[in-house]
Length: 285
Image (cartoon, rainbow, N blue to C red; front, side, top):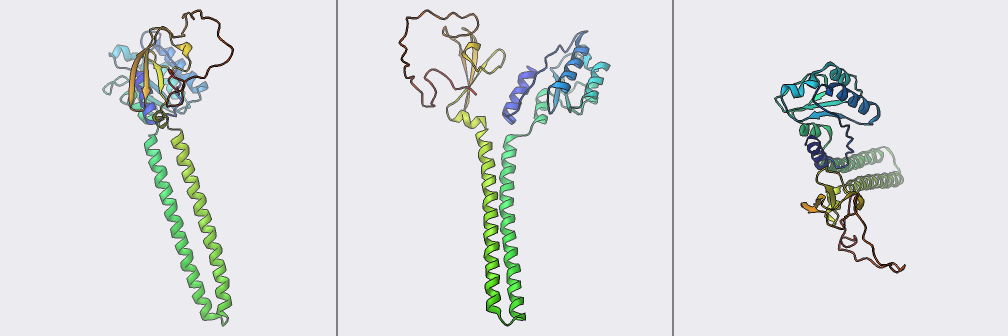
């Protein structure tokens, strides 16, 4: 349940997150050294930006492995930042004091671990608007400075017409350079926005794709061979989730492929749904 809570929060806040799981027992006489070993493995070879040490609630005896010295030393030795999320908000362990950050629940730990994609998009829009406004201000200052130069030259030089033409030429060069720089920066901001929207899985679901998971494990189905007859499935679409059960045609482990009459070698055109996928198949991410 803890793993699924963390997984759901990460999927909602920052779908691009890659989650690495290091399973281990979390209670009992052998729990403490195994927890320490899992931490050392993640810190050494996991390539993680942050480590969440978490488990669900329980009695003091259930949570006692997180008070053991070997676990505290393993957390302290981690070069990767560690968030402790052991038990409920009212539970306290030594691991909470050794970790870099304590979270009241595993879900709260996931909230702390990743940024909010919506906030990132909002900040990107604010930065683009600020850049545009600064460019306009810069252009206005340049115009003011040019006007002052023209005025001084008219007062100091007899051949003002020649100097005016020169200043006009300089003004056109400055105007052209400012416009070009403004256009380049605007295109960069728009390109970043397009890339961010292209990576948004919610937008992909809106185009008719779906995500299929095994209900028991929460694992994403990327091949028909992962599903056996009778497996419970969860199909996620743009506006929610749908339950499903694999039928007799499932190709998972142990399924038998029915004997079929020889088919012509000529390939048949497959009917496609509105989403562009072969009929009867859900697009997977």
